[in-house]
Image 1: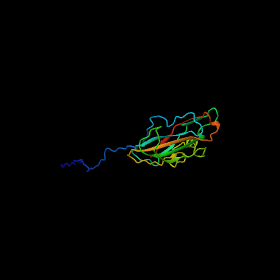
Image 2: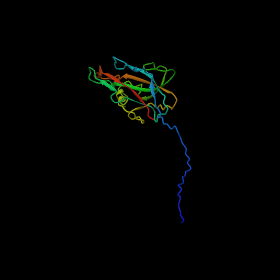
Image 3: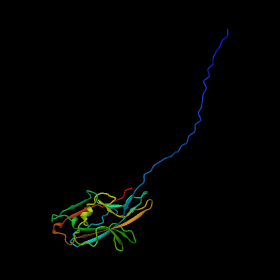
Image 4: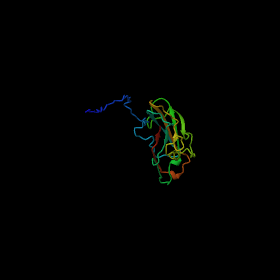
Length: 201
């Protein structure tokens, strides 16, 4: 008798494998940072204004971001950040205050309310020579600039486009004048406002 048999062998196999790795990926967003040297004090705190009364004040704003803004830094008054409370005359004050803003150059660092003497200014809103109510150049017109807009329609362009990774400063000079033809209806009115500087990437 002849026997026969089959033995089945299960062979194991191994593939060649190669790989590459790229570890430690991370992402950090850039930062835009605007500060000023006002120490939370106001540019102006003026009372008993009469027609023709005027004054100016300067503030230094610093940009120290890791990315550059995509458009010049804008100034505006956010909705709700200005009040014009009528006084005994029943009228408001903002339509009667000549308001001008300049970017200023000169030696020294100027804080909120500091002297602006010795500075040369470039106007970005209003006109320091105005003495009477002038359409488009009153404090009420500035308050109407109430939202960031790189084209400067609903904000005021500073013309200042600071670079990235370099501390950059700009001095702003604000000048007010109660128009010489302010009506008696503005007597006793009180204005409070907050000014915002803003930049976008």
